Length: 585
Image (cartoon, rainbow, N blue to C red; front, top):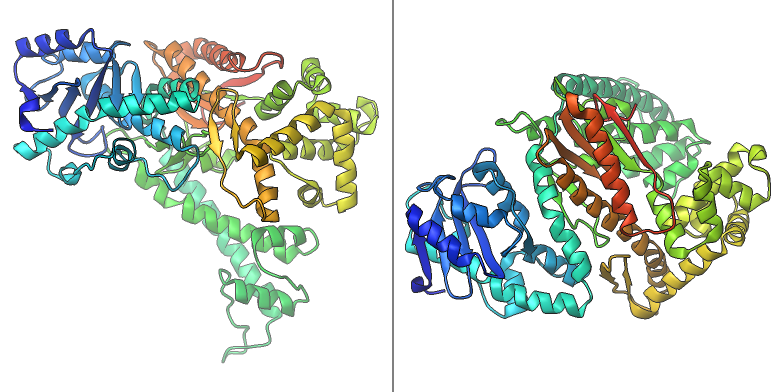
């Protein structure tokens, strides 16, 4: 963009004039320039909006929120649509520094991910996206320049161009979204931008003293297990050191572990987790070895380093959530990965509500199984859910032809393994490993399962065939995942069938969850309550303790409606509770 196509807006009268001129626009480009990535410790420098003809730049160092009010009011409204690339970033800075909630947005970053449909060779930064859709090369060198000092003409031109390019980019993307029948899921994602931005901005509170005490206990246990393993594994190694004691074994070395196990008469092909788990029940030393590995992972992944993520300005952890973290649309988190925090009371109890506040912890009960029952239309499984009985005992009763009261623990476990395993495309091999039974017995169980639920068998076969035939799958909302595989490679073909069965289910769960997040965020607006964490099918809200019961009901209602917008026959159960820490009690 040439320099004569942008205007640096400097006074209140001009701001009001610009806002009025944009009021009837269908869409405008939106971008911001900041002094860093953290909205809590860095500043908003520029705000840029653009039409097809002209870009307007507002210097937020010179113009405060009150002076910018006309343009900020415009950004909060549902029209015009605000086109932004990674709108979550802009929304956080606008919320933190200007006190506004960004209105309806079209995010070219999310649109690019949806259109790529799982193709991990595509890149989704603004530069590659503009090149891919518009055939234009963007110069992004000014992006990392110093935005805290006096601004150069080059910086202003860069800022204006990044806002202006978004309008033609949206036009191309809209056409492609419509062509791929992705407009519904795109709107679902766009509606979730603000909830995710609010969640990141809110952050979670971690009890540092509890966390350090937990790390200390884990370290003591880790060292004790390591010492025990040295004695047990070293006893089988013939080499001694100069003092007549066994040589120290590197517990992180697969070769040394395999050799030491061999000396104890335990032959293993490799020391991978899956291999060792199959032997753990028969060999206590392997069970202890797996425990040591788990403790080592805990210390390296969830040790002192987690405390480094506590923001000095807020005293809270503000993880980075990737809204489309997988091709199935699941949110993923990093810095740190809150979704990977071990699901134990010891860990989760460290994440607490500050004084005077409560946590509302809610998740869906067996959501993926319910999705499968609904989209497959299997009458027996739908009836099982409708009954409200233990679904795994009900399934076992159907499979084995035995009354509910006579189901054994092993029969229930077999049914549970099938209920969850088949959702992930598991075959007889996987079930045999899971239940530690023979391949013949595993296949017999699967045959009984499908005899009890013929609609499930039909749908899973159809989903696998569709994935092979069309090389793609879709969710209820239309989310698309295109597959790349060699049809002549038997292992790739088997993997494709498994993914073809699971992708529509897991992806539909993502669609439901994001709809629920948007509904919940809207319901909590104006109240002292905010979403602070999201883990697949679980949401955590922090609120003032005085409104905990109200927040709980709002949460149950929003999450229930999120399901009803997509599923029509299966009953919905939302498990929700008020707690002082990240655990339902």
